[in-house]
Length: 425
Ligand SMILES: *Cc1c(COP(=O)(O)O)cnc(C)c1O
Image (cartoon, rainbow, N blue to C red; front, side, top):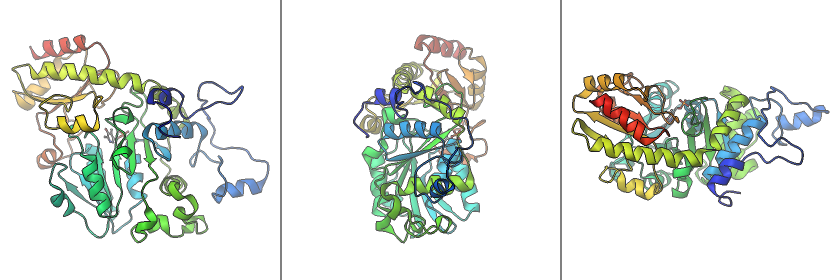
């Protein structure tokens, strides 16, 4: 199915293909449950012997249509929506790990994910080693242990804006017999498709560009179907040995390329229950319908704003991977030749205090704990999203205490630049 239609067509028509006389727009299946005429039919659903809907915690047609659209955009074989991006990253890991296991993650990741990996997962007995994504391969390789089950990174890190060398990390992961999981939230499949560079699993906070209108918190996990779990049987017993909670089903034997995503849906979602609501899935779908139109505009505006900031005397530094001379410009050109994202980070010569004063004077651009909205938004990570992190962790996460995270919207670029100018002056 993947690769046959172009991205714009998938954004508009993917996932929901109505039959004759069915609604043109994706219907919201606002129902917890689904009706059957024989008890045997329902029993077969519970045994995973047949596909079908019986309870919305396990599957819902609205959610499935949206997951199918994101899956096609990423070029995967299966996908599952979650209630948030946090739930997506948690489930993506927990689907492979249990107490005693270990993961390797780049240090420059979203602050919420850093907390999940370094505070909450260790309480469940899962350890995480953070690595510098730009370190030489040998140094990163030293972080692996026999009990390592996965490698994690973000295509473009929020908010550090480091660009991941996906091929390098895919090779490191595969050399150690484990999958590479990529959080592709900032790039979106419009600008980068990590499976084409060797990633095995992709996660999203659909809250960001996919929704794009700051309406709905949500997440998604997409499976490439490419990782050979059975070839590393000892590491991934949850996928390759009988699941007692399904009469001894072996996911790799029964579901083949769909083993990972089926386990996530049938087992983790059943037991932990962080489902997306069909109402919200509907809203995410409306956002997705314009993703291919919005992303180029976000990138075009961000490019102009980054260039303007770079030209100003009172701006100490600007990070934007689309800016020639940026530390990640070459990697961005390789992995995202059509554009990266709408988020810029920069610091003012006056540091932390100047950042607060500048933000208070903005009129068009608002202070929000959000990025990737159609409206321009600004945030000071050290005092907002990353305030739980120590100064040391801030530096490791690539967050300078003076950093302003500027999420460029799709208003007219000249108005955004004018707002920045008046606030700086
Ligand atoms: C926002 C974000 C998350 C968390 O997503 P929520 O939908 O807020 O739970 C995870 N990863 C990245 C890169 C993000 O930007």
